[in-house]
Length: 253
Image (cartoon, rainbow, N blue to C red; front, side, top):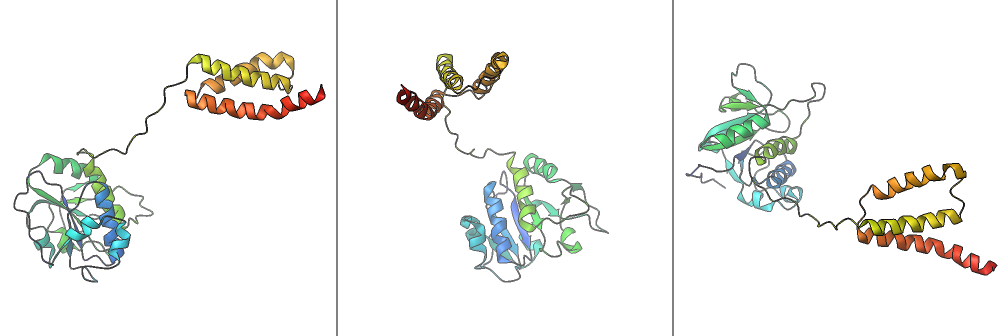
């Protein structure tokens, strides 16, 4: 499938370009990473196993819109022809003199400049070739453990996509409304109920430690800011635990 480049690049999100990707599964995982942070335009340069790839869909985990819109190009130059700002994600290449930035710095640049931008990622095994990097304006490199520098393709994509997403408004996960904290009267009732049960079981021993122990229990029970439902639930638990003792006391009379 050939691509039609966007002729109005102003204020558009960056594109993700995968150069000679090897596994359909990795393309799918990259699509999933993109969509999580609001990026939907993927461009593929001569994928090894062709396109479409049946292994990409399951790995995308629902990011089908990215895969359906993915376009294939014969060369990297064709894939970034409409992009004014091209970022090659790689380690610094010998013989290539380019500005080197972190994903965070690249994202700030993209949000602060006009024209279309592209993040370019190389094959899984070898990364971008020197000739690929030569087409870029800047190199994006992640500060990483020098003893274990082993990011996979989707991880590299998600780092760049996440940093870019900080500059846009994405919908936040739905929040669960919290109940108001219970009034002090309800807490005192629960504490008194527990205290009565503990006295009956001989918990406060030795007697000279009872005051300090009660203070500790009060601190524990008031720290979580229980709401009324939680207080009622816990008191129900205490009442249930207290029933065998009450039955035993009646039987002994």
